[in-house]
Length: 470
Image 1 (cartoon, rainbow, N blue to C red):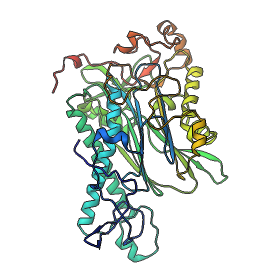
Image 2 (tube, rainbow, N blue to C red; image 1 turned 90 degrees about the vertical axis):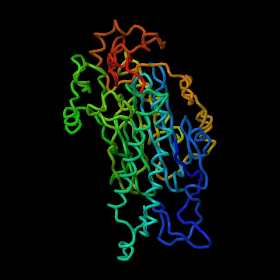
Image 3 (cartoon, rainbow, N blue to C red; image 1 turned 180 degrees about the vertical axis):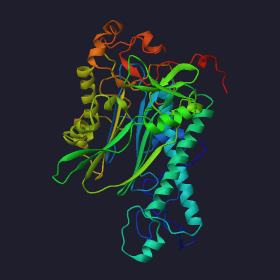
Image 4 (cartoon, one colour; image 1 turned 120 degrees about the vertical axis):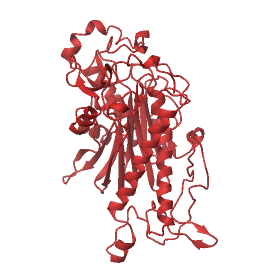
């Protein structure tokens, strides 16, 4: 990828050139004309393979200054979930968080690619927008400034203009990400893809872009100081009226299988495949002409002092835990640094209790604490973590190495689960589930055979393996 990003961990909003003060960055929080030392976007440049060395960016089990993240492999093969927290994202008060849930034979590679490349693309488009605004002589917006001055209101961008800039950056970044996947020479995304739920927090502003069925929620205090759950994103399923209308207009088909009537899927017009259980995703190019899109939903929210934390997670968590249960688990964790791990452990227990004959899905969790505070290092060490870059999980199973070399296919986790009654009728198909082993059948794309969970993708199109490489 050709974009450059600043690696400065203290990037602020003004710079000096030949002794003259330059107007503040459009993304900085502060008052216009405020003098601060600033490293520009191009002071340092990095490439994708240098990303893991950035101290403010974590992507495997661990914690940062104000967050913790944790992932655990399920029982269906390679862990296809990915996650990231990137603090000092373009400026010192900005944090990027994301969770990505892959599906299809190469879903794990797609999720990791998106995890690494999407933030860079967002940075690039934000920087481009900033440069255009500064170049045109317009006074930039300030993400967290409040003033009653009429002159200030005229000089600084309105909330609508701020939203418009962020919306445009998210839209362009997602579009560029999907375009890169389509033309990638070594990554076949024809029948593989990934969800994405991404947020950027800057001061009291929260910007969100998402596709697929990974979800973000927030724990907040109500007027009685009781914790409540607020869902920040929408699970973009094929049966949502707007999604279904678009898919059908593009000649795609939306229907549920007879043995899983609660799970609508997207199908090709000429083949009962692939049966994708979401309406938007990166990749999945076999369906892009038939209504599946990678255009994100975007929203902006103003945070308040009552808002405590945000949780991003893949559907392996939401399949078995409600929003309210997740907020309760995170808020009652003994230490903040252990919250993500405890949430994944709780989901794992629920899988065993609610769906004992089902193969547990991969789980990935990001917990972002909005006051920016975290436990002391000693508290963190007591929880059994090593460092933010140690690639292991709590169950002792190795997380897939991040170099993307291992690429064998695996059945993707499911969009939802079948009831216990349905599972009882399929015990004969699941005799290998409880022993924790992964048989060769688990690695073959044969629909729902041998699985009691509903997969994000049912089967590959018949022509997919014969498709010539473009």
